[in-house]
Amino acid sequence: RVKPSLCPSLAVLDEVRADASLKRLLFTGVGCAVQALRSMNGGDPEAALGLDELYVLGTHCVDNSPTPEAARRFVSTLPGVGAERADDVLAYEFMADFRVHARLRAGDGEETVKLAYMTLP
Image (cartoon, rainbow, N blue to C red):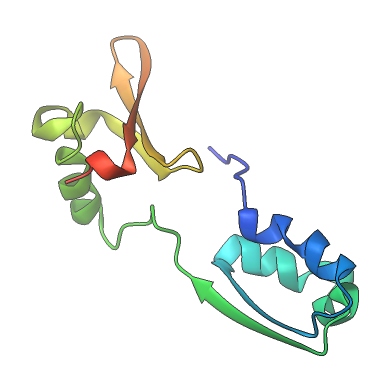
């Protein structure tokens, strides 16, 4: 599944463009946000935003695990999932609502467990 996601770091770019006093910007974002930024104005985001200098700091997506085993260990610690249901997890994402959404097999369908970040082990 591919799902669009919210990206607050891109939303602020309209404000940057509107403020002529801003000449330098450090943009921090995940890979897809960095790609979107770099594609602005045919690959010239500085001109699109009216900046003299643009610095970019890319980060990893937080819901990418280094190995399947690491992902299984993580989901097995989630309240509402646990080790007994870890194999039923189809996907999980850290979402803009400050929750982890875990999609699990449930009978003939699916179930989504939504856990607040602050409840994570």
